Image (cartoon, rainbow, N blue to C red; front, side, top):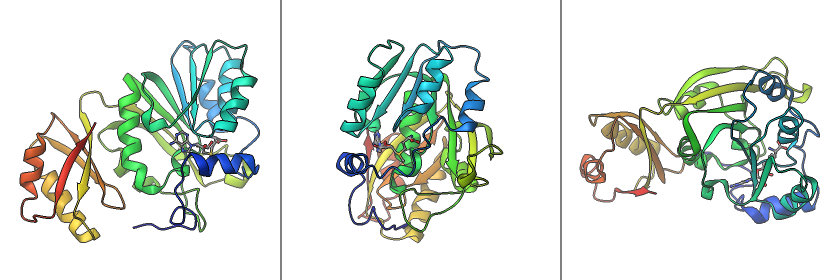
Length: 274
Ligand SMILES: C[S@@+](CC[C@H](N)C(=O)[O-])C[C@H]1O[C@@H](n2cnc3c(N)ncnc32)[C@H](O)[C@@H]1O
């Protein structure tokens, strides 16, 4: 299980992020659109697609989209002071919707979701939930694109990762169009960012389950193998605290079938999250 300086002490909730903005402790803020995202946006021809930017912060990416003719942008952030400022800043622009709220509670359907230092701001235990939620929020042919850190950090957030880890995380739920080390990152992030573009795999079911009873990675591997052996299951990924499991399958698998597969240990309990 991955530990870190901040998240083990306090949750990375609205109060945490609000305090960062109030204290102006926003070291992640580039003050401008991230160059690799700018380059990507410049390739998009249809400016009327629905775009979501979760954990939007000061929303330079949204500003760039607006300046380049995009007409249907939604940004969401959990920090109230930041969102109040954004509402003021964009008050005369009907091409952008600004939402104060938790991304994981958000409802909608988007053609494109842009990732810019949002995944790295979440506790690593949230990563399976992130994949599940992204898959839910995307339209049939929808894409998730942006930047991911290709390194680890001694003090977190941000929480890093690697290409191998992200490939396993998003496997089958998404088709990989691109995931490469960026050549045009800002200099402090040079060679430490991956630009990725994933397309929703609309032919599979992606479900998230609450899991109880696992206390070690050996047991996690055994449970994952049991699930992976069930006919129709294409990928299994468990959160680093063993509390959630993401299952990608051809068809919906009855929760009873999952429970039966792990009936060798009476402590194990699985419940679908909706
Ligand atoms: C590291 S900052 C990045 C902000 C912005 N993307 C940027 O690059 O400047 C992470 C942002 O995610 C927001 N955030 C964290 N958890 C969130 C959640 N569950 N739902 C929505 N926003 C969240 C924080 O308030 C913060 O603005």
